[in-house]
Length: 217
Image 1: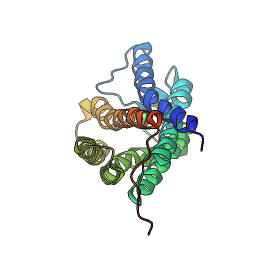
Image 2: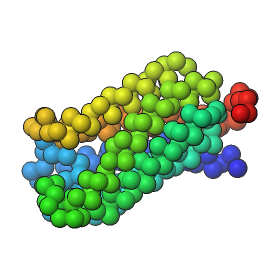
Image 3: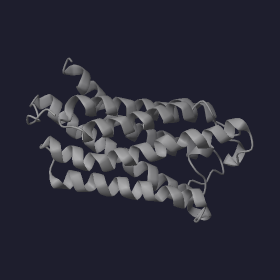
Image 4: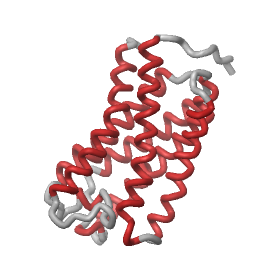
């Protein structure tokens, strides 16, 4: 594979999460009365949202493409097995899930009563679970690669574990008054982790240094 392709994929993985967060903030500001503390990101793409197509296509689908690009850079640059392959598989599931979510906006207020709204919730799960799982698996994958220090490994494990643990809390509606804030923290943390790892992968790709040899099974 040409070195330029992993570099391009890493750039997308690094810049994409920042662009997504900026888009979510902008769409919230453009919707009078929208409360990001209380309301979720999905409501920005709901059937009654003023800029729903932008959120669903550019936001959710775009983020899915970013995750898939990160998966490609990860596969091409990170060395080691089997943790790398498992992390990439989780990333692919997460990315495809986010792309599909864009086809199924939630119902007004994200109180889902139609089949389309229910499918939104169903296909949101792969992204909500896949990315944190990939982060947790990366603790081992980055260790085996040999070019990432213990801080990268520990951060990956902690970010993934916290994001994964937040899912049941959000689903149970334990903090309804702060659901939007809590959801953003749970989602933005792992995608910012993805951006940070992407920048590191970009640096490794630019250096062009191969990883340590891995014994074949």
